Image 1 (cartoon, rainbow, N blue to C red):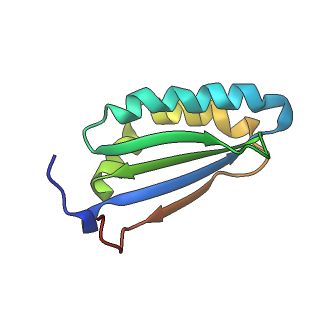
Image 2 (image 1 turned 60 degrees about the vertical axis):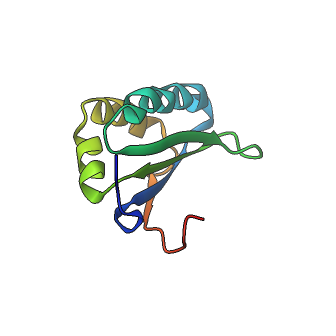
Length: 105
């Protein structure tokens, strides 16, 4: 898929699990990976767990455009997971969207 780097959008989403729900939060977040990576506008979609704070998970994903993000959020898997995820969190999701300003090389 051809895209202008300036139209790409990169998202960092931090989820802080309640300690007693850590394993379930991890399972739910992992359920997002495969379907998201197979979406047409997805550049990458990765999940991380903080080594020194295991209740903190970070999704880092890239999309070809704002429209690709909108399409992703409309994918049935996203609300299905989110509806189950939110009650298990210690705080609201922290979502940051960025654009690339450096050359990729």
